[in-house]
Image 1 (cartoon, rainbow, N blue to C red):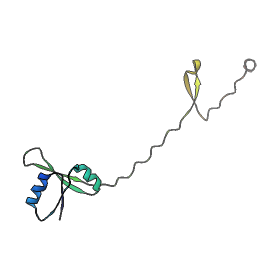
Image 2 (cartoon, rainbow, N blue to C red):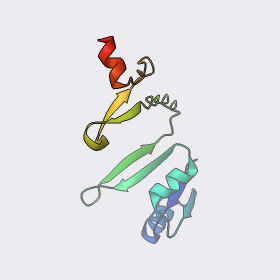
Image 3 (tube, helix red, strand yellow):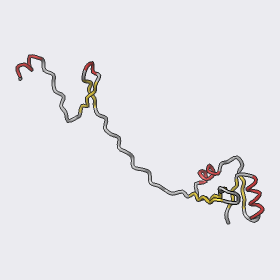
Image 4 (cartoon, one colour):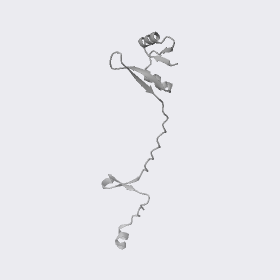
Length: 111
């Protein structure tokens, strides 16, 4: 036997007239979608249609979906300030060896 839940007085009165032997609960002040989300189970909703005497059925089912795999965060590259007044940056990688600065006279004799 279905459990009927209504959200307005007119619908509740109409259902009591059509199916008096069934259980009908009226929830005032709640939105239908909030009710569906709180229940967490399969619910069939009858919604008003586009014209007079028309209705639409909506079925809300809860499906178990696996959580997405975490996205690996990219390694942050070390950055060295270069250029005029250090206004540009240059990436420094671990494989790259930082060369020791030579004084001008050592560079002169080594080249």
